[in-house]
Length: 267
Image (tube, rainbow, N blue to C red; front, side):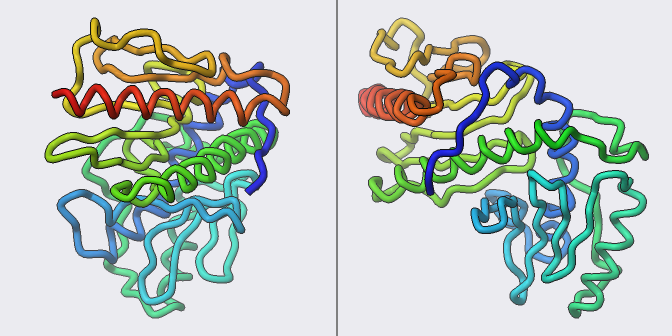
């Protein structure tokens, strides 16, 4: 997939749209929670980036997925679409259950209850979805670019997991197994309490001491050492020139993965 230009200057303004999208994505995750046998690694809850739709989609059950198209903020179930803009959770949930029943699912099994918390937003308490289209388009670009980069990385790593979005932290990621008990995680977080903007990260298990990190990162990335250790590239440090963005992010990821792999190999 070709690189979709992002605008680093408005990245800090994406917080509200990101939190609304995070809540909207729980509608897709609810499908997995409701109709898939729970798995120890919680993978029944995760979401897949579907580039042809520009959407985060649930795992498939009997040929059906529930997806959220990001740039248009639209819920999709099979061939059925519902615009979330102007709608509330109280409007959306019954519509979703009705569509699922039409497709042969037991509506009584559907639940929005979940075993984790996500950042609060008023849409969870009845406020209509109203995220700005420009901000949603940016978030779609961040997810789409990350998915393409991580799929290419996964193709080069024999022991890399499938690329999935995890609905708790809302990061899109793959996990590379380096050795017994040693892993390198590569992901894109659209924003959280550490960085209120999208950022790429590479983390490690076991975590190395901060003094072992060195200065090998490229692409304007840095080492994060507060509460967790990993390489990060926040949106505000991505070049504004669209023609330079993919190379900068790629250089960061290559250098961070190489360094992280060396560090965990020594543990």
